[in-house]
Length: 249
Image (cartoon, rainbow, N blue to C red; front, side):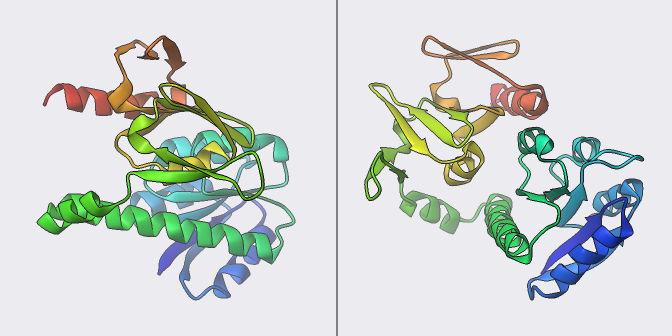
């Protein structure tokens, strides 16, 4: 079961989310509140897997909420303001639902959250146990993916080890390889879910890099060949922490 909370300064909005949650057999409502402070306490206590979060709240905005909670839970944003979508995706939210929220969009979003949480759980378990079977699983996993080409039924095979970095622009991404650039219709967030971590790491709302291809890091800039890639403020702390850990090896 995925433990959920609904957070919105309007009680009727949390009631709608609570009703939707009751219709999904793999979701469990553990709380609904108009106070983001109360919700933060639930998250910090480890009671929450998924938060349905309003952005515009007087006590604490949804963006501030996510900065405090970090990666302790997954978030689906719920708001009447589409202009906040880009900022929300900078925080790797699962989905962005515009009010009034139709059930079919809710349905799609929670299934996406379920897939992400299952992947996270399996990855965490593998790292924690350090079992030989984990190595076998990793070894047998494909080292490539297929991306959409320029025509309807055309798909291009991309080997992970060939990717230098990926740049996103709205609903398109460019994959930079040693000898070519591939453009495909896909969001950067969706592509990030396909790429193995490591070696891939999101360092900016518009960039995913391969750590293996980095030649130098200077302040807030990553260098891959002749390309200078900025490290965004949202991603900086986690990225530099990971680099420092690797420098101790």
